Amino acid sequence: MSSKMATMETDVLVVGGGSAGIAAATMAARNGAATVLVDAGPMLGGELNSGIPVDGCITARGDWAVGGFARELFATCARYDGYVGPVCDFRALNVVCIDPEAAKMAAIDLVYGAGVKVLMYTFADQVVSGEGHVEGVVVRNKRGRTLIRARTVIDATGDGDIATGAGCQMAVGDPSSRSMQPVSLLFRMAGVDAPRLLDFVSNAPENVSVLEYPGFAEDRNAAIRGLVEQGLPKVFFVPEGPVLGQAIAEGRMYPTSLVAITPISTGRREVSINTTRVADVDATDTGRLSAVFDDLHRQIEICSRFLQSSVPGFEDAVLSAIAPRIGIRETRRIVGDYVLTGEDILAGRKFDDGVAKGCHELDIHGSDTGHIRANIKDGGSYDIPLRCLIPKGAKNLLVAGRCLSADREAHSSARVMGSCMAMGQAVGTAAAMAREINDFGDVRDVDVGALRARLTEQGAVLEGIV
Ligand SMILES: Cc1cc2nc3c(=O)[nH]c(=O)nc-3n(C[C@H](O)[C@H](O)[C@H](O)COP(=O)(O)OP(=O)(O)OC[C@H]3O[C@@H](n4cnc5c(N)ncnc54)[C@H](O)[C@@H]3O)c2cc1C
Image (cartoon, rainbow, N blue to C red; front, side, top):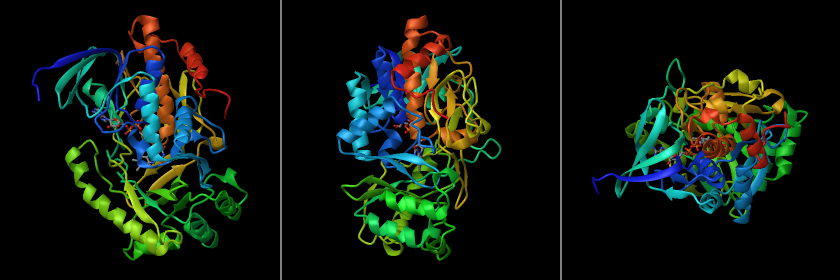
């Protein structure tokens, strides 16, 4: 490894290639900025590759709240036969189910197709900044260290690494206890007999949660009927039900608030499963994060055995994949020009400088079986203001994704991937527009009305829905 520092120059540097970062980089490049995207991992997509459904794109009422880049990603997944499509869980959400393998193909298509220069396997480890201006980011890979000088920098690292490195004020988890939501390792099972699973749900509906959002059906029975008639294995087992509850009581399952099953491929009869958890982990403590693999992989074995032995439809299913990395729900968030609040999201508040939308429920996972959930007013949407994507005091730094400026409650909703892609589209476009406005000076000079108009032209949903 060379000890000499190389340099590189670009208009826009995006750090982090998850759902927020791929949207940001694609849109910055398409809007005319020379764009570099750096990611520490081996594959674009971040959590999009884990198999979870994309939440936050469709309101509980059924309106699309996110368009533009996200819709293109879905269309590209469809081209690779990897789009299951919108699915209602008859609990609280309309989600979009995709095959994570197709998501990888789609992310590569869109980012490279926009002409973004991509540096994978490359970790951003130092921020060069002063007086609110980020001059560049020092990245490290097998060829050594490179200072990437950028006119505007977008932090899409999930953990807010760049904002932290630039000395911006950050918030962490629960402000009083500093506790954070549990980490989880998603896994997949193939060969699931969906009709048999749904038959079981129909005969033993007390095992699953439905109708937390009352607009989905007249009563519980109608919701169960709707779920079964939909014909897809989108099932949310809860510990209050006998199958999971007894398994936890008898030690055949670990304590958890959910075993959430999502269809990812009808061809492979494959589902993803969101259930494992280890609480009280600060995921920015890499030693601690690495240590929990041992617990999480045991939980995967325990849960797959539980499903095979206790849940009809899983008898012949096999473990088909585990997510490429531990899933992190919550670490650092920036403190931005505005902090989105739990009240804002629950009231479905709209803002003059709204540049993205969220519509996922308030969703705070606790330790063991603890879980706080609440609906957005009228099953609608709320706006994410541009001010939530600009760290206080920073001039040429924007953020998108999980590290947005929000209190814990608002964050638990806005962190989902539909909203992350919408935020990414907004800041990527804003960063490119900064060139036209003030030669990449303070991003606050970008006219929000013009930005909203440009986003709308590019398919983003900013108006017209509850
Ligand atoms: C277990 C679990 C279940 C979830 N369930 C759902 C769900 O059902 N639906 C839903 O929509 N959302 C769900 N979420 C939330 C959602 O997946 C994430 O909040 C969202 O994907 C975050 O997107 P992001 O782009 O901000 O970050 P990420 O997807 O985490 O991407 C960040 C990227 O930045 C890179 N990176 C980080 N630091 C650096 C660095 N210093 N240098 C270079 N690269 C770096 C990483 O390699 C990564 O590729 C879940 C999350 C978890 C953990």
